[in-house]
Image (cartoon, rainbow, N blue to C red; front, top):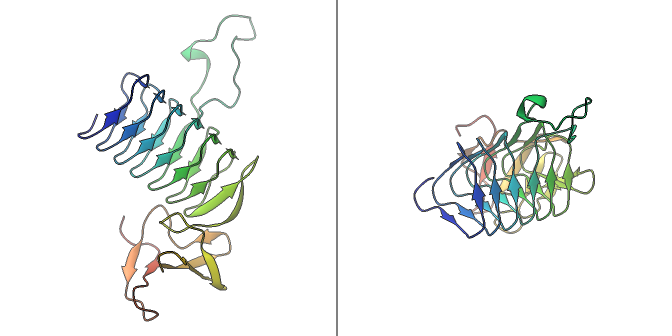
Length: 205
């Protein structure tokens, strides 16, 4: 467990789990065996992060969220015997830097949540979410894009999006892929309104 991390009462952290610095685990949170939690992560009350999950830095996991690891759950084998760890394969989940998972959301196994993506409260995520993607519903569907500050981006042109809250400007590679990929971004000089910044893909992490 990293320096400055705080764990509230009734939370449980299993063996071989790692938790970075300056994290907060709320009341009743559950971190399963072998789970990796980065730094500056908030795991809110009653959230469960099961084995096979890898959570990068600056991630928010809302109250009651479930990060799962078994696509075909059964209590017993076909022979009627209680299942053990040897009877199932872990389906991993990767949550990239800065992503936010809303209260009560469910993340199914074998899913990647892109950097700075936003999963709405109550959503059920069955497929990968792109960086900065906003997904809503059951099953979750991509409905827009969000800024690093968390606010929805407004489309200004075919491949240009702006955050009205903080003035950041984003360029999209296509309709389905925001320019920032895998959390990588490079700030470049912008000739538009003062204070705005442009992000270009392929920069250093």
